[in-house]
Length: 326
Length: 274
Image 1: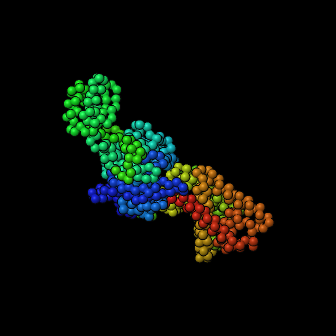
Image 2: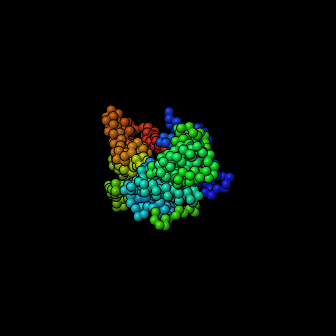
Image 3: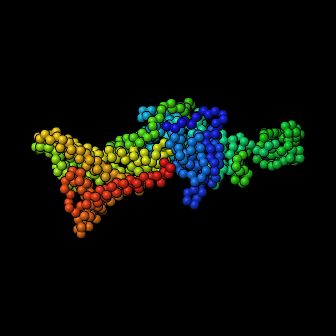
């Protein structure tokens, strides 16, 4: 039995997983190419296009595939040589279909709980608890082969958390789910994350990661492209502000011209319905903006520091806007 | 999720030792198998045809002691014992690995603290336990029934034959399982694995029959004959003059070890790093 990966870490122990120059090859294909990252505790998004190396990194962290170079440390242990010690404290929800179809959900989750080291009665009780938690009701007694994709995803997450791991890998958790199912799954991730567990969510759906994760790691072609806290990643350029104004077309036009002269217009977007969004730098605390608006008879709907979406961050990273961390 | 969603609760229990977890797999496979119609039918039919009459015969026929020739005639000659053992091995082992391949469920096992070795040991133990219900336990019951009703007082001699019966039962139990597992690791369909296991043995028997026309020593490649020859060695009954005991021993060892290694390598390649 290995040491538990502490779910409630001291502040100086905020990194749960480190990867240094990790290389993994599958024949001529290089899946991870010198991947380096420090993954903190919390809910972490592992982002990248299909084939970027996200699943390979997860499997290498579990010790399921050998590395060709570099080092990975999970809670201070090497997954390649100490995989069994690590795995009792890791839960893994694979991307692909992997459930045994000829048993019921409660049998399956209880069986896997026992393989994770729980006693039989304990495993059965815990299985019911986690199936309740993920929202599988009386259907738990039906064979898994009769389940919808959404229910299978829930059983997959149930089997990943049944042994109460400190670190959870979720590989494309919302894959194949309808919008309601996605919402439920993201809510589950959020609720598990709130218990202090570290969750690494691999996904290529940026909006989902943006909503549930505190930290993001962007990976492409087996390399780290960018990483950092969500707030820091999505913060726009310093001093750049976005203002939304509404008014008559003529007033808006005059205001935009005056605003550009006063504040240094960066961009202008006409949103229709007599509304435009202006991006500018150098307007100070905004008093000049409001004075200009009053002068030109337009209404200021919002005046906020410029913020990017994760999609912008992602695109920027792939256009060479970032490398080796934020 | 409802108005009051059920919240996540931490588990406070103590984990079992990692090495003992293969028993979870063995227990699950055994419970699943023992409820399967094919296994129940084969065990029932096999018990009736192979062992039931022998138990009754042992009790009602007057005998001084348990003798080796009687036990060999019952277990080793005729090939019925081997045929049932082959059929049962084919049915029991066919889905043990093929199903996990078909469902891609290896990852569920090996993302947990379990090694390929333990996974295979768990599955194999369950298969061996089922096989022993046909190949080892009934012959031992026959031997015990015979000893209990013997008229003579040579109990030590009878006990020796009981030991030999146990050894023969163990050989019958173990012999076909690794091959069946190997076939199961080759395919994702259990029907292919079952038919493949049975047909392989059948083809080997046919080939042995054909070549035995030129040289009777070729009989050693027939699985049923291999079992029969090994039983004659175990019970100390005279082997046919054309059979080389060492050749049989080598072939049997190969027949068990090579498939076992192949299964290990194939599962390891599926999993990598387990």
